[in-house]
Image 1 (cartoon, helix red, strand yellow):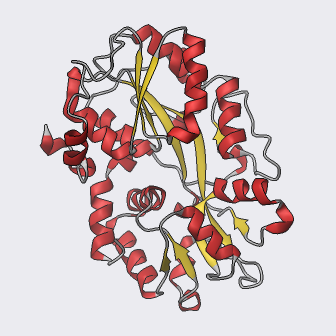
Image 2 (cartoon, one colour):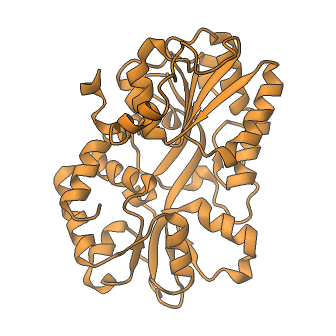
Length: 339
């Protein structure tokens, strides 16, 4: 099986050593309950999963970790896995499981709750919340905001860009560029960006803080970090502004957090109910309110002030399952000297 895991094995060996019994033979004591592998942060989703447990009326055991590592672990475990559901931070990890036939087809009434572009074409995973790639910029330093990430390789942006090259969301964006525009065009863009001496940060929050403080003029982030910062500090105390890119630019990628039901699950009926709960108004409102992400289920809209409606965005058209080709992206980033 290991030859199938190339995009997701960077830390698999360590994960297996730390969790040697994470299989159906006894990692979780209550085999009658539901088991979820969650690539979403515990601090973020535990309150919601506690509500899920009450809604189902059965125990819900959760193993938290990095989405890519958990996807690799699930491929390793195969049909022996204890997991019923995989809740992933991004579509790529779900795409990797779908590609290897590790997910079950979801019920049509469930699929119908979310627009086709935010779920698997194989109908075996579905998005539960969405996030948009945007440019954060300092208005005093950027009088003319770019219309495309391709503009960032121009000489005038030298020493002015912040980004998080080791962050999964940046790597997913680069993967999307590869899918949309090809290997050569993406490699050329990365080399051009590197030549402009961008400043690397550990995560999106650090990039936004640097833009807000004027340490860099512009940064590549996900939209919700800015809205969280405004909710925390107040709009008058946040200098940075956002640019939602037009024209289907790869820098306007809409990625999703999503969920799929594992082959081998012995609790299919309960798992179906769990997926439907994550798409319920209660859960969708939770994601919108707590993380400022976009709710994806029909009939639920965000109430975040000044957040553009999801259907107004000009995101690129892409099969999100194809974001699973992470290894090629990591190789390209290493060749460009970015990771």
